[in-house]
Length: 217
Image (cartoon, rainbow, N blue to C red; front, side, top):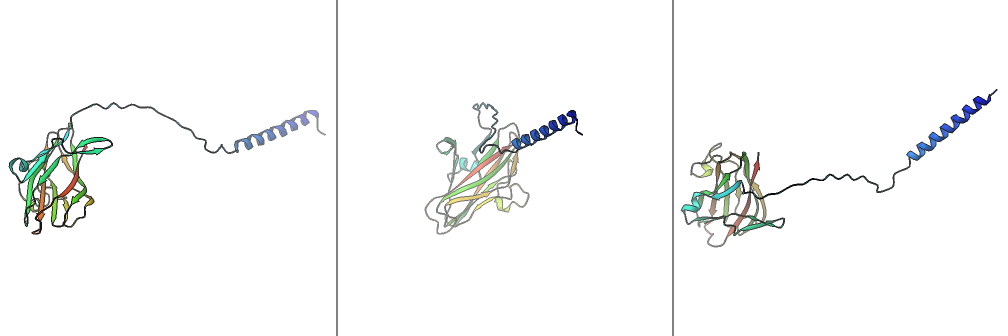
């Protein structure tokens, strides 16, 4: 026989179970579509003007010969993200039927306070490369021997991973890279440019563009 107290406890238990079922059902209702939580943190960066610490300067060939020139006057620029960046320009002669080795057309200087890793990467060629081929070299040391980089030997003064633009290359995108060279603060390495001209090369201009990239360590 159920006492009034027992009946009361059973009723309370049924109510509790029903309430729990209702709560669980509410928890299982899906969140409205498109609901999201957005957290925003705010930061600030100040950009101040400073002289460049990785610079390119003329080598001895443009200084001492009419066969080559180096222009860093700012007359040549390239637009990136709406700003004009300096694009130094090297001009060399390709002599018909000859292979010309410009052993020192540019210097890559580290004026930063830290060592830098330098790599050269081409991004485009233009003009007529039918009768021309070119090589772009970078040295391993500050004063490499003034010889044909191809004859330098593995592990010599010149980095063995150089860029070559073969004859017949079509104008447009062209990607190739040198090896990476580490340059100490206050030091420099030099760049060589080799031009091979077919006997049929008597006129015209061919162009290759490359990026000298320095990673500050």
